[in-house]
Length: 328
Image (cartoon, rainbow, N blue to C red; front, top):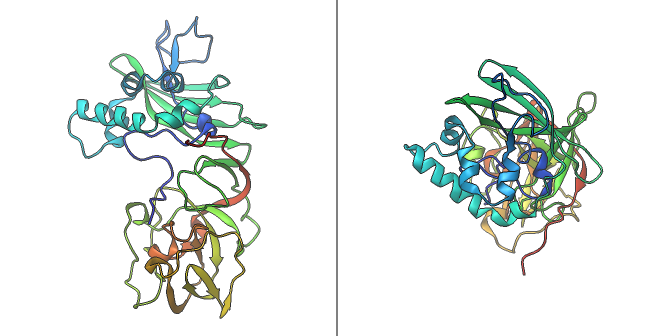
C-alpha cells in the first residue's frame, strides 16, 4: 500500500508541481514594518519574504529558519530539540529539491493581511494556467520577528478547491503533481454517484495506516470504518454506495453480482494478495465505498472501510496536468 495523505507531512513538505504556488508559494514570512504591523505593500516600503522565493533559491536552511517553533514542532513531533527539527526540515526540503526547482512563483502576490495582536492571517494569489487561486496562512510574531505559523492552504478559485495530487493511487486518471479542481457544492442538492472522483476525509486512523475498525472475515475487504473522520483529505473514486453488495477480484469491482465496467483503472498484477477480496458484503447505509484507480498501489476502503457522506468534501470537476519534466 502507498501512503495517500495529502501533502502536509514530514518536516514541512512542499506540494508537488507548479500548482502548489497557491499552497506553498503562498507561505508568507512577514517582516515587521515601522509600526510593527503586517500589511501588504511594496517590498521597498515593507520588507517581507515569501518562503516560496527562499525555496526557489535553494536556501533551505533559511526557509526552515522562517518557520515558527510551533510549525517546526508540528512538522517533526518526534524530535525534541529545535536544532534537530530544523535539520529534519532542511532534509525534507532537500529530498524534494527537484520538485521545488520546477515551480514558478513570480506571479504570487499578497492580496490581504488581517492583523491581530501578535498574529496575522495572510491571503495570497497566484496565476496558474488560466486560473488565479487564493490561499490563506498564518504568521506570528516570535522574538520580534514575523514567522510562518501555518502554511497557506485550502487554495480556492471561487467555490472550487484546489487539490494537488501527492501520490500515484489514482494513476492513470491523474498522477503526482496534477492539480484537481474540486466542486465543494456538488453534493448540496445531489446524491453522490458511483464513478464520481471525490476528495474526502477518510475514517480516523487511515492517515496512520490503521486498518479496519472491525477485522473482516477471511477473503473480505473492510466493511466497517471507525466512527470519526481523520483531519486529512484523500482523493479516490466511488465504486459502490449504500445498500450495494460488493466484492473485489484481481482489483476489479463486482457490484451487485456484476463486474463493473472500469476502463480507467490500472489493474493489479495477477494474484496480488491486496487485490483479491472475493467474499461479498453490503455497504452500510449512508456510506460510500471508494477505491483508487491504481488498484495495486492505493490505500483505500479495502483497508479502512467506507466513507460517510458527511465526510465528502467535493467532487472532481477538472484536472490540470502537471507540466513536470520526466526524469531521464
